[in-house]
Length: 118
Image 1 (cartoon, rainbow, N blue to C red):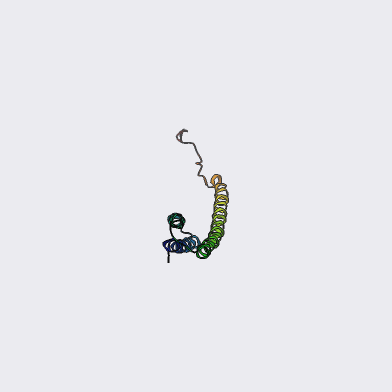
Image 2: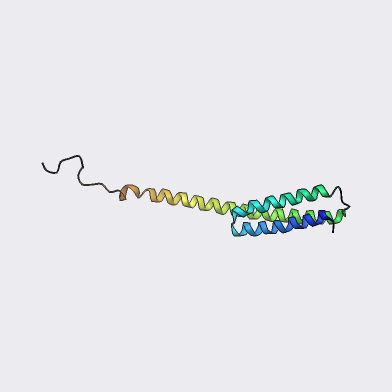
């Protein structure tokens, strides 16, 4: 198998790992895996010019990458909408709880500046 196709296969594996991280909500590790996938695709694209690679094999790998990219985009949109809903819910809860601030605030019956003795 030519090195170009091998790199594309590694990129597909990295994409699957990225999809698993997206599904699990592991946002920190997604960036690392996505950069690795991008690097592998870039290297494979540069190698395709120097190696004798079958166009059909290359097309097959690229179509798999395109399909994987669609899955990644859908999963990222889902994660984004879930995070936006959570943020909106937390903001509403904060506003609701802020309404109780005045009712739970302790106000003394007398001022500390007024003398109690006379």
